[in-house]
Image (cartoon, rainbow, N blue to C red; front, top):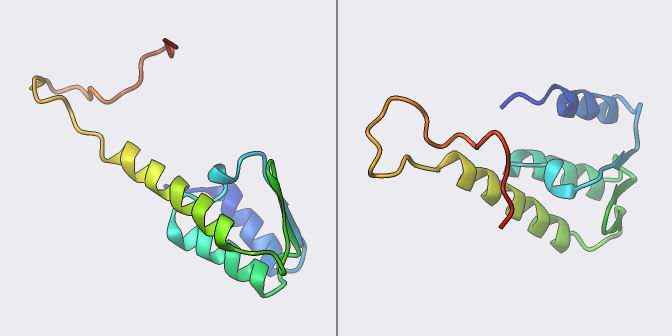
Length: 106
């Protein structure tokens, strides 16, 4: 999955144009181990000075365990979505995994 905004952010950090990341939901930031690892590595090295999230601020001196946990859960969520299979009763050609037009809350 291409993420041009994410790549633009990475370039700004690498070029020294940005030192912080502000994100509404941390699970939207990194959805695979490579992206999560890159963020954590840059944070630990001090290239990223702070990561501001809904549940707090991470700095190079922060305990990274929670970041690993958040990024791991985001990765598993993405994997689960991509691995959805068609129901065994369905032999049709269309993709039965598509979401309905409207979400229904029960």
